[in-house]
Amino acid sequence: MARNKDMDMAGSSFGRLFRVTTFGESHGRGIGTVIDGCPTKIKLGAEDFAPEMSRRRSSDHRAHTTPRRERDQVEILSGVFEGMTTGAPITLFITNHDVDSRPYEILGNLFRPGHGDYTYFKKYGHFDFRGGGRYSARETAARVAAGVVAYKVIEPLDIKVVAYTIELGGVKAENLELEAIQKNPVGCPDPLASKRMLEILSEAAKEGDSIGGVAEVKISSCPPGLGEPVFDKLDADLAKALFSIGTVKGVEIGAGFEAARLRGSQNNDPLTPKGFKTNHAGGILGGISNGDDIVIRVAMKPIPSIRIEQETIDRQGNPSKIKLTGRHDVCALPRVLPVLEAMVKIVLADHHLRNRAI
Image 1 (cartoon, one colour):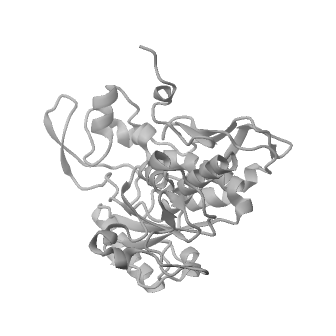
Image 2 (cartoon, rainbow, N blue to C red; image 1 turned 120 degrees about the vertical axis):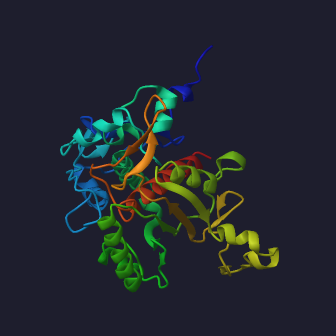
Image 3 (tube, helix red, strand yellow; image 1 turned 135 degrees about the vertical axis):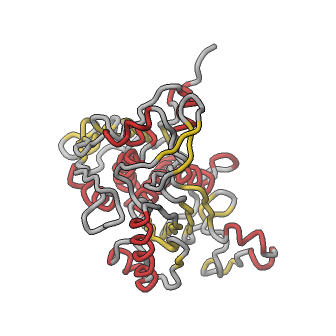
């Protein structure tokens, strides 16, 4: 039986015209990405990656993040000459410097509840479990790097993408002051709510537990017309891109689930010569952007690796107990925010290039 080309990708690639493939494991030599389809003559240098990579990286001023300290310096291996993209595949590599696999030796026989260990074992029978291996959050650093290139493609359109924390540990942001996002360690636009969020993070960290949260992603100045009919709708591709991030368990656009509780007369966005009166659609109609703000909310589960003893089984199916001692975040937020933005930028770059080809 002949293998389909997409079958050979083994789930590590995303996109059509702007295609991103990530590679590497959490405790391997490094991780990286290959980007195919990037237009030529776009200015790109190693220094362009530093701001976004620093947002995803753990640091000392975030007591609730992993003690693992990676430099996350992006090395451009191909596709760029004299500071400009050539149109050839761009290969980006990020070396792993701060690796300690000793706490993960227990995972050679036991499965972590809530993690991908069990399903990877059932699918492959053999896999790199050190630090989560291929399915570790470490892989998302490669996505952030790819997102930098993607934004270079759509930057001339003046599209702005910003993600922020709107709920953490049950505490919800009531006021959206976007200028406050970069001023607190949780990336929340509500200064008062962010203080309570930090308290909850500290409490969970002391208990050896973890917590979940919700982020909102806002895309402004997106031109109308991005998205394809039927299967490649813009909202469908955005949802897939965001669901591909390991911690994500829910995605809604615009009114989302609330739309199911409204009547058509309430949910429809009236059209005027100046634009839409409301935005229950979240900037997308019929799978195509309508020029309004695209608003996405993303629900993230608690980090499954915790220091509290839990029930599990070993590889032979025998009951056991597990208590983890590795280096883990207490919550995916706020380090996941640049990852969310990166995946959105990749989708927008792909659909922009598709639109340009029409």
